[in-house]
Length: 132
Image (cartoon, rainbow, N blue to C red):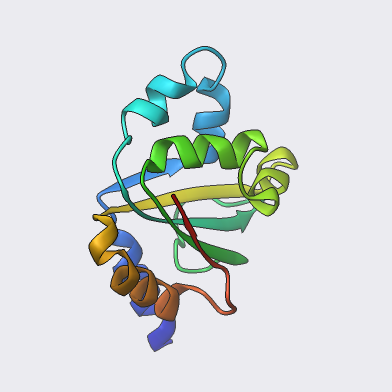
């Protein structure tokens, strides 16, 4: 129970939250506008796969979490959902699984500590990646 509460508190602190379904819908000509430019700053982001029936209520109950660092989170997220980034995220989005991105801006200098903290609370295996 303490793990679920810690996850819920941490995810609620993310200053930017983006659903993959929204980005996929918008990614035609304006995907770069919706994510690439809007969140074109460095930081750590968490890609969480909830499953098909995710309603947005129980954010701490999910199937899988992956933690990344990127110098341009928006570009990396668009790459993930369009198949040029993380293959598992692409597959989850393609097959209609509820995927949500939680963004935590930071510079590269502070990213290692943030990646470690996010991973300890959110990830059950070693799904951590740094992407420049």
